[in-house]
Image (tube, rainbow, N blue to C red; front, side, top):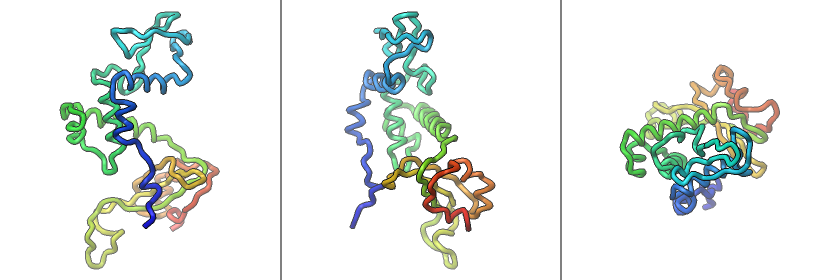
Length: 221
């Protein structure tokens, strides 16, 4: 039986993750690389050289104006007392788990208190939500309707898709020219009608004026 190319696409294994982000210096190096891809730039004077403070490894001090900049400044990790490696592991578990991770499970995986795990999860989920709030899909977009949850067993007189407890939603996936998924936007709806989609402004909010839409039947029922 042929395998689903999307389901079996390569991800980041735990071995690869540990090799890249298992220690504090590796996490700091990764953040600096993402923050200053072309090299350090002082936010105060624009100078391109800095010195790391031995006693505070997350800080870079400008060689010109001596302004100190934290690699976590302006992020949800700013001022955190937790190791950056703990934050990175929390991100990994939240994004790699197919069925999600509870705060209790995150507590056990990270070796932190429940309150800490709960706060970590809430902050990371909020950031992901804000990041995707204004996403507009481009180029080639595939759309379809689906249901989530509900009873698995069918009740007499009811179809599987209409079983009690199921939540209807619309999925729009941006794909490349080879059909490989790039980004996805999901929207819960009351039903699959053009009126419902129009009320939510879903199509106008996630689709650009010009794009190739591969399946639009959900909007014309």
